[in-house]
Length: 348
Image (cartoon, rainbow, N blue to C red; front, side, top):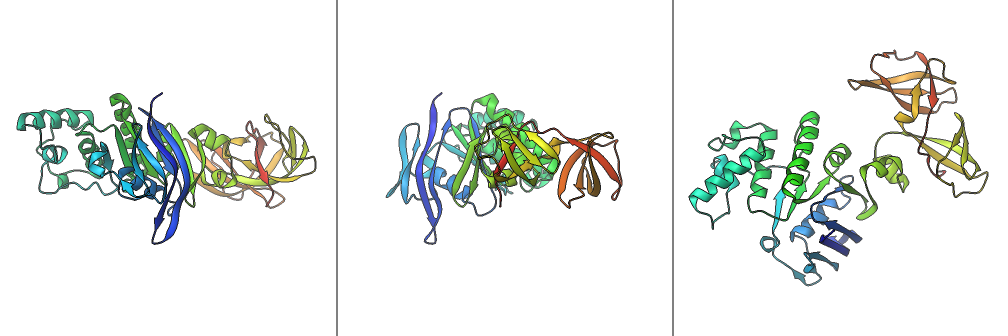
Protein backbone atom coordinates (compact mmCIF):
# COMPACT_ATOMS: atom_id res chain seq x y z
CA UNK A 1 0.00 0.00 0.00
CA UNK A 2 1.13 3.54 -0.76
CA UNK A 3 2.25 5.54 2.30
CA UNK A 4 0.60 8.94 2.00
CA UNK A 5 1.72 10.40 5.34
CA UNK A 6 4.86 9.62 7.30
CA UNK A 7 5.40 11.00 10.81
CA UNK A 8 9.04 10.37 11.68
CA UNK A 9 10.18 10.80 15.29
CA UNK A 10 8.68 14.27 15.74
CA UNK A 11 8.85 16.55 18.77
CA UNK A 12 6.65 19.60 19.39
CA UNK A 13 6.78 22.13 22.21
CA UNK A 14 4.18 24.38 23.82
CA UNK A 15 5.38 27.30 25.95
CA UNK A 16 8.79 25.70 26.24
CA UNK A 17 7.47 22.31 27.33
CA UNK A 18 7.73 19.19 25.17
CA UNK A 19 4.13 18.03 24.57
CA UNK A 20 4.89 15.54 21.78
CA UNK A 21 8.14 13.57 21.59
CA UNK A 22 9.67 10.62 19.74
CA UNK A 23 6.37 10.09 17.92
CA UNK A 24 6.25 8.11 14.68
CA UNK A 25 3.55 6.47 12.55
CA UNK A 26 2.55 6.01 8.91
CA UNK A 27 -0.81 6.42 7.20
CA UNK A 28 -1.56 4.56 3.96
CA UNK A 29 -3.71 6.04 1.23
CA UNK A 30 -7.40 5.31 1.80
CA UNK A 31 -7.05 4.25 5.44
CA UNK A 32 -8.64 5.96 8.44
CA UNK A 33 -6.59 6.27 11.62
CA UNK A 34 -7.37 7.66 15.05
CA UNK A 35 -5.31 9.32 17.75
CA UNK A 36 -7.05 8.46 21.02
CA UNK A 37 -6.21 9.64 24.50
CA UNK A 38 -7.19 11.85 27.44
CA UNK A 39 -7.12 15.64 27.35
CA UNK A 40 -3.59 17.04 27.35
CA UNK A 41 -1.92 13.94 25.87
CA UNK A 42 -0.74 15.84 22.76
CA UNK A 43 -3.07 14.39 20.14
CA UNK A 44 -4.41 17.75 18.89
CA UNK A 45 -0.84 19.10 18.70
CA UNK A 46 0.04 16.20 16.39
CA UNK A 47 -2.95 17.01 14.17
CA UNK A 48 -1.97 20.69 14.05
CA UNK A 49 1.60 19.72 13.13
CA UNK A 50 0.27 17.59 10.25
CA UNK A 51 -1.87 20.54 9.11
CA UNK A 52 1.13 22.89 9.22
CA UNK A 53 0.00 24.99 12.17
CA UNK A 54 2.70 23.75 14.59
CA UNK A 55 6.47 23.78 13.90
CA UNK A 56 8.66 20.78 14.69
CA UNK A 57 11.55 20.86 17.15
CA UNK A 58 12.91 17.60 15.72
CA UNK A 59 11.93 14.86 13.26
CA UNK A 60 10.00 15.37 10.06
CA UNK A 61 6.58 15.01 8.43
CA UNK A 62 6.38 13.77 4.86
CA UNK A 63 3.31 14.08 2.62
CA UNK A 64 3.35 12.02 -0.59
CA UNK A 65 7.06 11.40 -0.03
CA UNK A 66 7.88 15.12 0.15
CA UNK A 67 9.02 16.82 3.37
CA UNK A 68 6.26 19.13 4.61
CA UNK A 69 7.72 19.88 8.07
CA UNK A 70 11.15 19.70 9.66
CA UNK A 71 13.04 21.93 12.12
CA UNK A 72 13.27 25.38 10.53
CA UNK A 73 10.81 24.62 7.71
CA UNK A 74 7.02 24.35 7.67
CA UNK A 75 5.13 24.12 4.38
CA UNK A 76 2.12 26.47 4.45
CA UNK A 77 -1.18 24.75 5.41
CA UNK A 78 -2.91 25.80 2.16
CA UNK A 79 -0.23 24.00 0.13
CA UNK A 80 -0.71 20.62 1.84
CA UNK A 81 -3.97 19.60 0.10
CA UNK A 82 -5.63 18.75 3.39
CA UNK A 83 -9.21 19.24 4.56
CA UNK A 84 -10.09 19.97 8.19
CA UNK A 85 -13.23 19.36 10.23
CA UNK A 86 -13.35 21.10 13.60
CA UNK A 87 -15.32 20.58 16.80
CA UNK A 88 -17.23 23.88 16.44
CA UNK A 89 -18.25 23.41 12.75
CA UNK A 90 -17.07 27.00 11.90
CA UNK A 91 -19.89 27.60 9.38
CA UNK A 92 -20.54 31.14 8.14
CA UNK A 93 -23.96 32.25 9.43
CA UNK A 94 -24.52 34.79 6.61
CA UNK A 95 -23.95 32.23 3.83
CA UNK A 96 -26.37 29.53 2.74
CA UNK A 97 -25.25 25.92 2.74
CA UNK A 98 -24.17 25.88 -0.90
CA UNK A 99 -21.99 28.95 -0.40
CA UNK A 100 -20.57 27.54 2.83
CA UNK A 101 -19.58 24.34 1.04
CA UNK A 102 -17.97 26.16 -1.89
CA UNK A 103 -16.30 28.90 0.15
CA UNK A 104 -12.72 29.22 -1.05
CA UNK A 105 -13.26 27.50 -4.41
CA UNK A 106 -12.42 30.68 -6.30
CA UNK A 107 -11.36 28.98 -9.55
CA UNK A 108 -14.79 27.42 -10.16
CA UNK A 109 -17.56 29.09 -12.13
CA UNK A 110 -20.94 29.68 -10.51
CA UNK A 111 -22.34 26.67 -12.36
CA UNK A 112 -19.46 24.45 -11.23
CA UNK A 113 -19.96 25.59 -7.62
CA UNK A 114 -23.65 24.80 -7.84
CA UNK A 115 -22.87 21.35 -9.19
CA UNK A 116 -20.22 20.70 -6.51
CA UNK A 117 -22.55 21.80 -3.71
CA UNK A 118 -25.35 19.62 -5.04
CA UNK A 119 -23.12 16.54 -5.27
CA UNK A 120 -21.71 16.98 -1.77
CA UNK A 121 -25.11 17.69 -0.21
CA UNK A 122 -26.34 14.44 -1.73
CA UNK A 123 -23.24 12.65 -0.45
CA UNK A 124 -23.85 13.75 3.15
CA UNK A 125 -27.58 13.00 2.92
CA UNK A 126 -28.82 16.61 2.73
CA UNK A 127 -29.66 17.04 -0.94
CA UNK A 128 -32.09 19.84 -1.78
CA UNK A 129 -31.05 21.96 1.23
CA UNK A 130 -28.55 24.27 -0.50
CA UNK A 131 -30.57 27.44 0.22
CA UNK A 132 -30.87 26.87 3.97
CA UNK A 133 -28.68 28.55 6.58
CA UNK A 134 -26.66 27.11 9.46
CA UNK A 135 -29.07 28.31 12.18
CA UNK A 136 -31.83 26.22 10.57
CA UNK A 137 -29.88 23.00 11.07
CA UNK A 138 -29.39 20.55 13.92
CA UNK A 139 -25.91 19.95 15.31
CA UNK A 140 -25.56 16.73 13.33
CA UNK A 141 -26.59 18.46 10.10
CA UNK A 142 -24.12 21.29 10.72
CA UNK A 143 -21.33 18.75 11.16
CA UNK A 144 -22.32 17.12 7.87
CA UNK A 145 -22.02 20.49 6.13
CA UNK A 146 -18.62 21.03 7.75
CA UNK A 147 -17.54 17.68 6.30
CA UNK A 148 -18.94 18.58 2.87
CA UNK A 149 -17.01 21.85 2.92
CA UNK A 150 -13.80 20.00 3.85
CA UNK A 151 -14.39 17.59 0.94
CA UNK A 152 -15.12 20.34 -1.63
CA UNK A 153 -11.46 21.10 -2.60
CA UNK A 154 -10.95 17.31 -3.13
CA UNK A 155 -8.22 16.86 -0.49
CA UNK A 156 -6.25 13.63 -0.19
CA UNK A 157 -6.46 13.69 3.62
CA UNK A 158 -9.23 14.85 5.95
CA UNK A 159 -8.12 15.90 9.45
CA UNK A 160 -10.84 15.75 12.12
CA UNK A 161 -10.36 17.36 15.53
CA UNK A 162 -12.93 16.04 18.06
CA UNK A 163 -15.57 16.47 15.31
CA UNK A 164 -18.53 14.93 17.14
CA UNK A 165 -17.92 15.98 20.75
CA UNK A 166 -20.77 18.56 20.73
CA UNK A 167 -23.34 15.93 19.74
CA UNK A 168 -25.33 13.51 21.88
CA UNK A 169 -24.01 9.96 22.21
CA UNK A 170 -26.46 8.24 19.85
CA UNK A 171 -25.99 10.84 17.09
CA UNK A 172 -22.22 10.81 17.64
CA UNK A 173 -21.98 7.08 17.00
CA UNK A 174 -24.32 7.17 14.00
CA UNK A 175 -22.50 10.08 12.39
CA UNK A 176 -19.13 8.38 12.99
CA UNK A 177 -20.30 5.43 10.89
CA UNK A 178 -21.72 7.76 8.20
CA UNK A 179 -18.46 9.73 7.95
CA UNK A 180 -16.45 6.50 7.71
CA UNK A 181 -18.66 5.30 4.86
CA UNK A 182 -18.34 8.63 3.02
CA UNK A 183 -14.54 8.66 3.27
CA UNK A 184 -14.27 5.00 2.23
CA UNK A 185 -16.63 5.55 -0.70
CA UNK A 186 -14.47 8.38 -2.03
CA UNK A 187 -11.14 6.75 -1.14
CA UNK A 188 -10.11 9.67 1.08
CA UNK A 189 -7.61 9.16 3.89
CA UNK A 190 -8.83 10.25 7.33
CA UNK A 191 -7.16 11.13 10.62
CA UNK A 192 -9.37 11.71 13.65
CA UNK A 193 -8.37 13.01 17.06
CA UNK A 194 -10.71 12.08 19.90
CA UNK A 195 -10.92 11.18 23.59
CA UNK A 196 -13.98 8.99 22.92
CA UNK A 197 -13.07 5.35 22.30
CA UNK A 198 -16.50 4.48 20.87
CA UNK A 199 -16.10 7.23 18.30
CA UNK A 200 -12.59 6.04 17.43
CA UNK A 201 -13.71 2.40 17.18
CA UNK A 202 -16.62 3.33 14.90
CA UNK A 203 -14.57 5.29 12.37
CA UNK A 204 -10.91 4.17 12.44
CA UNK A 205 -9.15 1.15 10.92
CA UNK A 206 -6.12 1.67 13.17
CA UNK A 207 -5.79 3.65 16.41
CA UNK A 208 -2.84 5.05 18.30
CA UNK A 209 -3.47 5.34 22.05
CA UNK A 210 -1.54 8.33 23.40
CA UNK A 211 -0.30 9.36 26.85
CA UNK A 212 2.07 12.22 27.68
CA UNK A 213 2.94 12.94 24.06
CA UNK A 214 3.75 9.33 23.12
CA UNK A 215 1.91 6.57 21.29
CA UNK A 216 1.74 3.59 23.65
CA UNK A 217 0.09 1.20 21.19
CA UNK A 218 -0.71 1.46 17.47
CA UNK A 219 -3.19 -1.28 16.66
CA UNK A 220 -6.65 -2.32 15.50
CA UNK A 221 -9.64 -1.61 17.78
CA UNK A 222 -10.01 -5.36 18.37
CA UNK A 223 -6.42 -5.79 19.56
CA UNK A 224 -6.52 -2.64 21.71
CA UNK A 225 -9.51 -4.09 23.57
CA UNK A 226 -8.46 -7.74 23.80
CA UNK A 227 -4.66 -7.46 23.78
CA UNK A 228 -3.61 -4.13 25.34
CA UNK A 229 0.16 -3.84 25.41
CA UNK A 230 0.34 -1.60 28.50
CA UNK A 231 -1.69 -1.16 31.65
CA UNK A 232 -2.68 2.40 30.69
CA UNK A 233 -4.18 1.10 27.43
CA UNK A 234 -6.05 -1.63 29.32
CA UNK A 235 -7.45 0.97 31.75
CA UNK A 236 -8.33 3.52 29.07
CA UNK A 237 -9.92 1.16 26.54
CA UNK A 238 -13.22 -0.44 27.49
CA UNK A 239 -14.26 -1.33 31.02
CA UNK A 240 -12.94 -3.94 33.37
CA UNK A 241 -11.48 -4.84 36.73
CA UNK A 242 -8.08 -6.07 37.83
CA UNK A 243 -7.78 -9.11 40.06
CA UNK A 244 -4.59 -10.25 41.78
CA UNK A 245 -3.32 -13.56 40.41
CA UNK A 246 -0.40 -15.94 40.88
CA UNK A 247 1.40 -17.49 37.91
CA UNK A 248 1.12 -21.29 38.12
CA UNK A 249 2.75 -22.12 34.80
CA UNK A 250 3.45 -20.69 31.36
CA UNK A 251 -0.24 -21.06 30.54
CA UNK A 252 -2.22 -20.74 33.79
CA UNK A 253 -2.98 -18.27 36.58
CA UNK A 254 -4.61 -18.79 39.96
CA UNK A 255 -7.13 -16.15 41.06
CA UNK A 256 -9.86 -15.92 43.67
CA UNK A 257 -12.22 -16.96 40.86
CA UNK A 258 -10.26 -20.14 40.29
CA UNK A 259 -7.63 -21.14 37.73
CA UNK A 260 -7.60 -19.22 34.44
CA UNK A 261 -5.90 -20.76 31.43
CA UNK A 262 -4.14 -18.52 28.93
CA UNK A 263 -3.96 -19.02 25.16
CA UNK A 264 -0.73 -16.97 25.15
CA UNK A 265 2.48 -17.96 26.88
CA UNK A 266 2.95 -16.15 30.18
CA UNK A 267 6.44 -14.69 30.47
CA UNK A 268 6.69 -14.55 34.27
CA UNK A 269 8.25 -17.25 36.50
CA UNK A 270 6.02 -19.50 38.56
CA UNK A 271 4.83 -17.78 41.74
CA UNK A 272 4.95 -14.24 40.29
CA UNK A 273 2.15 -11.94 41.44
CA UNK A 274 0.33 -10.23 38.57
CA UNK A 275 -2.88 -8.28 38.01
CA UNK A 276 -5.18 -9.91 35.46
CA UNK A 277 -7.71 -7.85 33.50
CA UNK A 278 -11.29 -9.13 33.65
CA UNK A 279 -13.66 -7.56 31.10
CA UNK A 280 -17.47 -7.45 31.56
CA UNK A 281 -17.86 -9.94 28.69
CA UNK A 282 -15.55 -12.40 30.53
CA UNK A 283 -18.08 -12.77 33.37
CA UNK A 284 -21.09 -14.83 32.26
CA UNK A 285 -24.38 -14.94 34.15
CA UNK A 286 -25.21 -18.55 35.11
CA UNK A 287 -27.80 -19.47 37.80
CA UNK A 288 -25.76 -22.65 38.37
CA UNK A 289 -22.43 -20.83 38.25
CA UNK A 290 -19.64 -21.49 40.71
CA UNK A 291 -18.97 -17.86 41.65
CA UNK A 292 -21.53 -16.14 43.93
CA UNK A 293 -21.60 -12.33 44.00
CA UNK A 294 -23.74 -9.47 45.31
CA UNK A 295 -25.01 -6.78 42.93
CA UNK A 296 -23.76 -3.41 44.17
CA UNK A 297 -24.59 -1.23 41.14
CA UNK A 298 -26.49 -1.57 37.86
CA UNK A 299 -26.67 0.47 34.65
CA UNK A 300 -29.37 -0.25 32.06
CA UNK A 301 -27.90 -0.31 28.52
CA UNK A 302 -30.96 -1.31 26.52
CA UNK A 303 -30.28 -4.84 25.28
CA UNK A 304 -27.95 -5.40 28.26
CA UNK A 305 -27.54 -4.37 31.88
CA UNK A 306 -24.05 -3.64 33.22
CA UNK A 307 -23.82 -4.97 36.78
CA UNK A 308 -21.10 -4.22 39.32
CA UNK A 309 -20.63 -7.39 41.34
CA UNK A 310 -18.99 -7.65 44.75
CA UNK A 311 -17.27 -10.91 45.66
CA UNK A 312 -17.06 -12.33 49.18
CA UNK A 313 -13.42 -11.15 49.32
CA UNK A 314 -14.48 -7.54 48.67
CA UNK A 315 -13.17 -7.49 45.09
CA UNK A 316 -15.48 -6.12 42.41
CA UNK A 317 -16.20 -7.28 38.86
CA UNK A 318 -18.26 -5.93 35.98
CA UNK A 319 -20.60 -8.15 34.00
CA UNK A 320 -23.07 -7.68 31.14
CA UNK A 321 -26.35 -9.59 31.56
CA UNK A 322 -29.11 -9.74 28.94
CA UNK A 323 -31.59 -7.02 29.94
CA UNK A 324 -34.42 -9.48 30.66
CA UNK A 325 -32.27 -10.70 33.59
CA UNK A 326 -33.28 -7.72 35.71
CA UNK A 327 -31.84 -8.11 39.21
CA UNK A 328 -32.01 -5.68 42.12
CA UNK A 329 -29.14 -4.07 43.99
CA UNK A 330 -28.25 -6.25 46.98
CA UNK A 331 -29.43 -9.43 45.26
CA UNK A 332 -27.07 -12.43 45.02
CA UNK A 333 -26.36 -13.89 41.59
CA UNK A 334 -24.03 -16.60 40.30
CA UNK A 335 -21.58 -16.23 37.45
CA UNK A 336 -18.81 -18.09 35.67
CA UNK A 337 -15.63 -16.78 34.08
CA UNK A 338 -14.95 -17.36 30.39
CA UNK A 339 -11.78 -15.39 29.62
CA UNK A 340 -10.57 -16.22 26.11
CA UNK A 341 -8.01 -13.40 26.12
CA UNK A 342 -5.93 -13.36 29.30
CA UNK A 343 -4.30 -9.98 29.80
CA UNK A 344 -2.01 -9.54 32.82
CA UNK A 345 0.48 -6.96 34.04
CA UNK A 346 3.02 -6.88 36.90
CA UNK A 347 1.16 -6.46 40.20
CA UNK A 348 0.91 -2.94 41.54
